[in-house]
Image 1 (cartoon, one colour):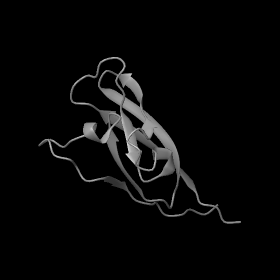
Image 2 (cartoon, one colour):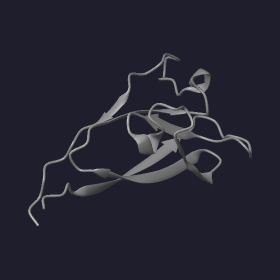
Image 3 (cartoon, helix red, strand yellow):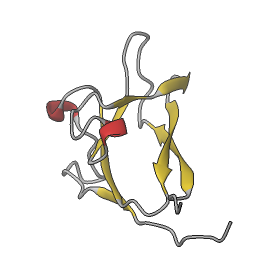
Image 4 (cartoon, one colour):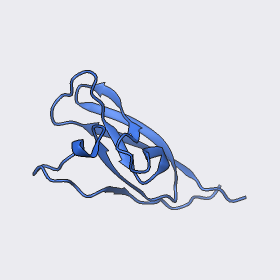
Length: 98
């Protein structure tokens, strides 16, 4: 039986300004573990007031597209010019022998 290798994907997000207690950062994307584009897909854990982290397991052959939100698409991460960035893409990795 040939099974896909699994890789662990770690997200680490730094906000420009500290977020007050009670605020949350999420990663939303094309994978069900990321909410299938639900803006509250994968809640990240507060590391400190400006750093958030989380991880998920993904088949090594999967292509992942994602963006960062604060719980809604109205609060999506923006680029340095204040515009909406393109989806972030993490491509598949090659298979390894067992």
